[in-house]
Amino acid sequence: MRLRTCLLGLLALCVASKCSYSPEPDQQRTLPPGWVSLGRVDSEEELSLTFALRQQNVERLSKLVQAVSDPGSPHYVGGLHRFPPTSSLRQRPEPQVSGTVGLHLGVTPSVIRQRYNLTAQDVGSGTTNNSQACAQFLEQYFHASDLAEFMRLFGGNFAHQASVARVVGQQGRGRAGIEASLDVEYLMSAGANISTWVYSSPGRHESQEPFLQWLLLLSNESALPHVHTVSYGDDEDSLSSAYIQRVNTEFMKAAARGLTLLFASGDSGAGCWSVSRRHQFRPSFPASSPYVTTVGGTSFQNPFRVTTEIVDYISGGGFSNVFPQPSYQEEAVAQFLSSSPHLPPSSYFNASGRAYPDVAALSDGYWVVSNSVPIPWVSGTSASTPVFGGILSLINEHRLLSGLPPLGFLNPRLYQQRGAGLFDVTRGCHESCLNEEVQGQGFCSGPGWDPVTGWGTPNFPALLKALIKP
Ligand SMILES: *[C@@H]1O[C@H](CO)[C@@H](O)[C@H](O)[C@H]1NC(C)=O
Ligand SMILES: *[C@@H]1O[C@H](CO)[C@@H](O)[C@H](O)[C@H]1NC(C)=O
Ligand SMILES: *[C@@H]1O[C@H](CO)[C@@H](O)[C@H](O)[C@H]1NC(C)=O
Ligand SMILES: *[C@@H]1O[C@H](CO)[C@@H](O)[C@H](O)[C@H]1NC(C)=O
Ligand SMILES: CC(=O)N[C@H]1CO[C@H](CO)[C@@H](O)[C@@H]1O
Image (cartoon, rainbow, N blue to C red; front, side, top):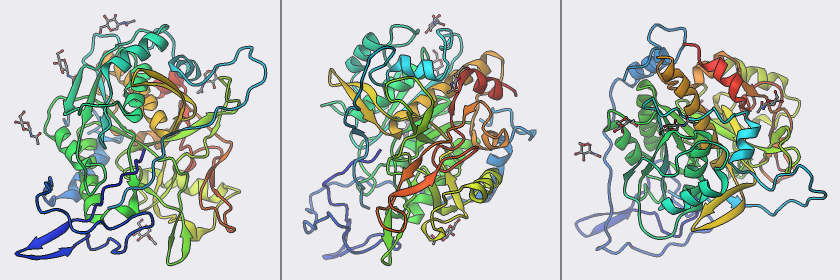
């Protein structure tokens, strides 16, 4: 999710008494719409700087990740060991309903568990050292009391934990954020009864999420949760390529360590921006990194019944302009491009880029408890990401009980198995530019992988069967 902020993110560099604005070389120098320059930053203002050293042997690291994430490789056995965009997580208007028999009134843990075919037995056993985590940024904090209240209201029919095992980093005081509350509540409802950590990274990187700070926290620990979910992202074009590449190298390291990192695909569909007065779709990062698993969003076809899932029109998806297409997805993407009957004009997207999302889950109409108040109709891929993460944790639980290593970086296997164990979402399109050429429509889902819902949503027993093999 993205949050609007009213801080001015230009960094004034001063040498002796001479100061100059210095956005990174590939950043635009003019203010984007909606921004106002407030003049020079006060000389007493404190800034926190993170220095990330340029990494050597990145090529070798990339080969290593390939080897440890490919089930066919002998090295797959684990143990190796600028300007922020507008807010997206939102409450939608309540859909209209007629007749009430057999209806649910919004997505709760029991709706999630029913749709994804989780039974009362599908919870953490408490006998492994399994754990999962979500990461929070942008001064989003959760309240332990909200989590307890949420579980009291909605956790009646499955074994669960009602408090987090560990908070890494500093939680600020003050009001809880809906994002943070949502992530913790649903990670712990899907990945029920599994020990859960929250990483809290305050501060900003050029007024956006300090992803590097969080990744350095991960790199600094030897024993940490196997699955990490992150519901934050920025437009690819709003970040410098040096920063994107440096963060991506940390993702590669995490993949080499056997961690599973899940990112929300974003809540603006294919997105839209104009470059030299021409419209284009607008990919987002980290969703577009080839070393993370990206989660898109779906809705119920009938919003009040646990029915078939269709595309949630906000589901982020598309093609990176920074990262070339990784080999693991070439075949699936080529198949999509050659078979989709509704392809947007080719000038709108970069068909040679990393395509996302990889998977999806419900993103529409959730109940969240935040600041002691149950809030209905919360929507966004911020919701689908912790749900998918929790389900992968349940699969890790079975793998650990069988003496297997945790799943690690999932994508090569996911594409190799052609989405086995996932419900293929085949109906609906996501949103994009509102102009005559595309009329608000981005890509459309279809059979197999697509850049709207990836391979689809989890059908737990089938996914377990597909992913329990060594
Ligand atoms: C839930 O986890 C606890 C340990 O944290 C364990 O004692 C309990 O048996 C687990 N519940 C189920 C249903 O497996
Ligand atoms: C890394 O871990 C060490 C030992 O626990 C700690 O002293 C240090 O502050 C940590 N560094 C960071 C960047 O978190
Ligand atoms: C398209 O993506 C490739 C990487 O796959 C990149 O090198 C190229 O610059 C991108 N083109 C545009 C117009 O962004
Ligand atoms: C759950 O199982 C039912 C019955 O087999 C099936 O119709 C449904 O599609 C499954 N859910 C998912 C998400 O695949
Ligand atoms: C990663 C993780 O959750 N590790 C835990 C394993 O179990 C020990 C003992 O209970 C905990 O201290 C660790 O945090």
